[in-house]
Length: 220
Image (tube, rainbow, N blue to C red):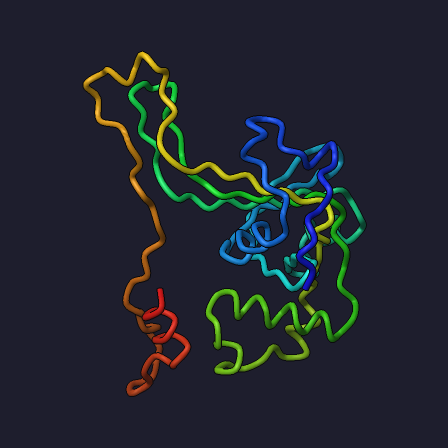
């Protein structure tokens, strides 16, 4: 797995508050690996579209997948320029003035062309990665995709050669004169919460949550 930092390009360099820009692969990979959903942007006949999709990263590539009937999949596979972005919200930043309210976040933007994954080995690894991204260990507990399901699914990849992260953390940045105001200021942390597993309405009696399910919930 590469950890080389992508060289910022004129497109990927963070321009708004550039000190928040981060370009090392360890940071970029960590944000992508924690994110369940990214938004993929592209244009069709001059009209912009942004679609939320499950993502998974393996090495130097980030993957998305969809139906062979999907217009998005067909257009991306044809090589149209694309943008993949994901954001993790870590907290509400409450300042003394309305203007300086913000959020603490970690985000990644990946730019480039999506390519259709043709090789069976890479394609199978990506499909397994999607399931493992949702719940580590789940792939070995369930039925694998059938030939018909594989036929109806396309996997696309984007290289992490043109990518950047942007991170905001810490306290509010109020104007100096506002620190004297009698207004509470600070950060309200936010995080995803894992609830108790809820059985499918058609689950047969006596089937308990698997080790992957119970173990993941306990770790979270």
